[in-house]
Image 1 (spheres, rainbow, N blue to C red):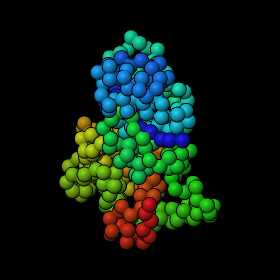
Image 2 (cartoon, one colour):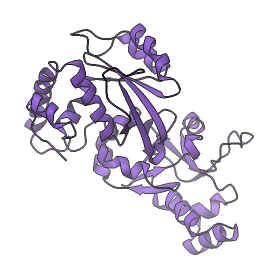
Image 3 (tube, rainbow, N blue to C red):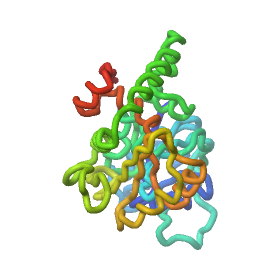
Image 4 (cartoon, rainbow, N blue to C red):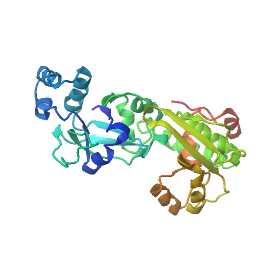
Length: 316
């Protein structure tokens, strides 16, 4: 079994179409799917080049049609929604024969049927060791490393822990996580501003200006400028209300300050159910202390915070 990545149109423009039909696909409308899916390499090469395409197109088409097999994982990044989707291939190569009138902006013709074994994963929470491989390449279809980690993600598990030989390891990790979370509850709001800024840095963002304090807008401005994330500004509000989850009106009151930037709200003690539902409707990303425990243990947090929490350094 292998794992692959696919780009579903510039900026993810073809993602809604593909998800509506539960497919992934490539363009190249002039390529004969029957030739691509059933002829020899020499025949496919002759056909692709006769249509005016070069070896780069040939390689990507061949991998998608012939090297990618039923049961393989294919991942894609959805830029508008800022999440990663893991799919599993269910069919051999197919020619698109649906919504043929909807051609503008939907350059999908060579298709594979897929299933979705797990919910979308926010790019900020996506497994860091795979993020560069997924966001970096500038092509349409390419191979990904670490199939074992992707299998864990597809099963809703944390890569590296699910296959541990000693079943006590997971129990020990959970106990350690609870201890770190208990200590983290004593951090003040300024400490959490530092932690959240460090978290965004760990995802590859540049933190603009100072963090927290007397900022005129919100506590943190983080700009991504690499891979498929593009040149995108995030504004983050950090709140610590002792033992109190944040409700939607609090979040809504700050949304206007984000302007054209993406908005993220951090609450140390979590959110109400209504806040989570409304945040999803309004494309607001919610972060809380419980979701940052793995990051705190991973070594990316500032040294003063690490010392305050008396954290061990766990990497890998």
